[in-house]
Image 1: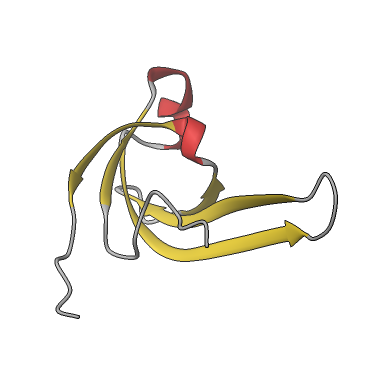
Image 2 (image 1 turned 135 degrees about the vertical axis):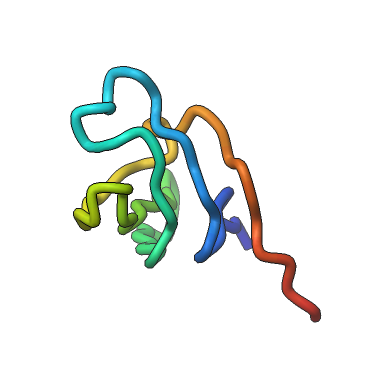
Length: 74
């Protein structure tokens, strides 16, 4: 099963070209879309809150660095 590269609670720094939306954000929600069968695909988008307290949707290509990750016990 393909997992998201980010987890809820991750603090991320956005790439320079996205700084109009803020420099840093926290992942609030992970949305997964998939298509099954031949040529199937899986994609993720993320609802994040930036330091301006705005909720925005991003993809993983918008992220430059993941600064912290909540460690979960399994």
